[in-house]
Amino acid sequence: MDIKLDYTLDMVKKLMAIDSPSGFTHQVVAYVGEIAASLGLKFTQNQKGNGVITLPGAKPSGRALSAHVDTLGLMVRSVTSGGTLKFVRIGGLQLNTADGEYCTIHTRSGKVYTGTVLSTSPSGHVFPDSSSKARDEANMEIRLDEIVKNKDDVLKLGIAPGDYICLDTKTQITPSGFIKSRFLDDKLSAAILLGVLHHLKEHQITLPYDVKFLFSTYEEVGHGMAQIPADVTEVLAVDMGCIGLDLNCTEMDVSICARDSSGPYDYHFTSKLIELAQAGGIGYALDIYPQYGSDVSAALRAGNDIKGALIGPGVAASHGMERSHIKAVENTMKLVLAYLQSE
Image (tube, rainbow, N blue to C red; front, side):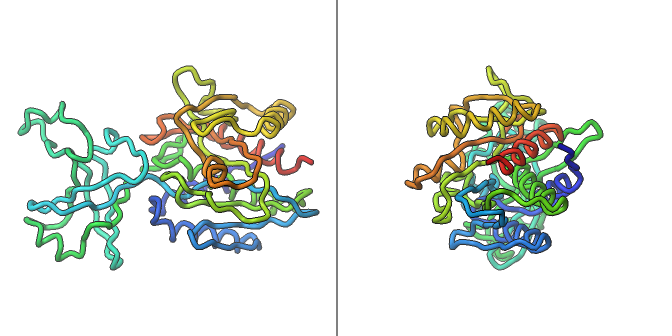
């Protein structure tokens, strides 16, 4: 199966450039809608903000694939007397990796400011506990790139509790094929689904069944795909594969997850994906992720009567400074295409 990755990798860069922590995803979902329109495909949204691209096939089905476009982030909790911002996390961001990172603050009036995430003991020349102080919400803050000396100065800028703080992604694709960025979980998979759609349209491939491509907006806080279209009966979540400890997955593989924190995925669906990977000579790993949940997990917990399975590109250092490889992108696209074209 010949797959060109240029379009998909371009989608990675463009999706990463749009700030979208859970609950602040309107811009990235609108962009997904623009891509659907460029491919001549129907795009809709539900009240929650989730996007749906419908790909017509030879006959109706209840098949769907999902990826989430929401990311981890921060939110302003309060303004200190000294003019810095205290924050709370959105999702499970590893705060020790956020110390020293540049960020963008979006106010509800549309103003945008920049700043830096710092420890409250940021200088080794001044604070004896600069190295030992815990990196957590109580001991970290945002230093604004504005001339502010006190709380009133910050409030005059229009910054208030509830404003979103978005970390710079620092996205790079190296000559050796590594993809380095924050929030590969799960914009890498969203780019893969858009790349699959482009591949199918470019090669004028008609699938045996209609398929819905679901882009969820609250996965990082646990309820991303709790609501799914009424006619969907089978969902393949495309999310990152975990790496570390005794797991088999590498940055080159497509991961097939047999079980996560929500329990086992559908036995027959998972077995079919393994068979497709083996038959297609696709580099895959089969693993169990005990501290992981997906859009399928949310859909099942909400009571949807579906079969569910989970795959995705291997991603190292998840919820921190993440990395994958173009081989994982290729293997994931191959498995998605094999599934879509299977009877």
